[in-house]
Length: 223
Image (cartoon, rainbow, N blue to C red; front, side, top):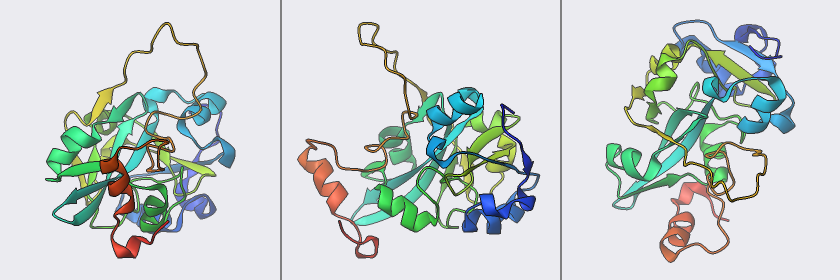
């Protein structure tokens, strides 16, 4: 696929995050890995540099769902041509009062993977892994490898077969139509793959959002 050289993932454990390498046996089929420039790990830049269509590239985003003072982490896997319906469908599915992208430092620390390389393979066993049906139906989908310097390619059906995976209809929502009057600027990241999307504090957050970002369980640490 694209201009990359793909090898069986078991032959290049150096291109895998430690949790990913340990979890390869959970996949009921082969996985392939390719080495990339770590500076090009963000989805849009990666696809442009290596001739990988966005339609076969998937984002795995970490979601923090909160209810009654308890926070649950989950992962959503959607094609790069869509974005996860986090505060609607995902929030309701997880039975949460509020759901949002997990702060970047939390996602990295709790997954054991690098920012920009988080992938559904090798996530903690108690995390729900929500898969969009279009991902499940893909013959091959390109996802992170646990580090920024690699990418995995697997059949979408293998991701849906992971122990904690659940296919959720409507998870991936169409992207909004671009404003034709806005100046054209080339994207460097897919919609969910952004600083705010990963939980970094926006310039002027609402009080509820500020409290949500700051009110973390003790084991998450503090800013």
